[in-house]
Amino acid sequence: FLKKELHLQFVDNAYNDFRIVVIASFFTALFYAFYGLFFTYNELLNLELFSRKIIAYKSASFVYFDFLSEFLHFVSNLKFFIFSYFGYLGFRALNFIFDFFNFFMFCSLLAFVFNFVLKIKIKIIVLFLCFIMVLGNYFLKEQRNNALKSEQEQILLWMNNFNFLKDNNLSLIQKEKDLFEKDLKDLREIFKKNAFEIGIWWFSKEKEDLEKRINESLK
Image 1 (cartoon, rainbow, N blue to C red):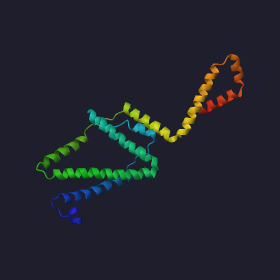
Image 2 (cartoon, helix red, strand yellow):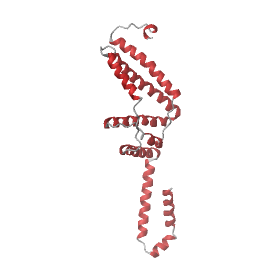
Image 3 (tube, rainbow, N blue to C red):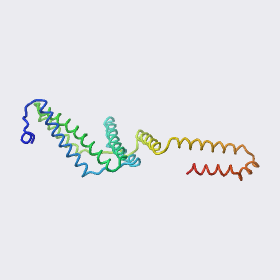
Image 4 (cartoon, helix red, strand yellow):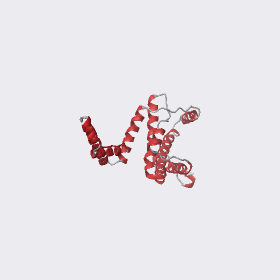
């Protein structure tokens, strides 16, 4: 296609290789991004959905591969979680852009690797081994993690705290904290009173105000 339609001369030099790889990767990545836009569904994630999704990553017996899989699965879901703040249209648009650039880089890297492989003498052996590896993926039993790990729990705690701070005014939180401390001090003073003083206090306006503030704090 590149030779006939785009009239490229396949001279054996790095510039032509680069040009062919970029053009081929661009259209492949564009097709992949449009396919993902119209034929795949990724739901918007809130913190609860995000906390459930990060658990089920593809686990591996080799500890470094297991960590890498866990990390990549977390980053992928974190991307969807962040995109969800831009609404449905923003989510779809950003996902399309990221799909395109990610797959473009992946295709370009893969093309350059195979461009080198196709020029060496043992290319048949290399291609055969690649075929065996790809075929083996279909027969490997996929295992997924099903328990929340300590590092995942810690990350969720940080995100939950950040989400709480984002949704609340810090000055308002400080004000509520000061009022709560004042109420506790008032209660401590009550414990110092004798039964007669507590009886008088029980029918005072001070008691009504304290009860009102405590009820508001509990709400």
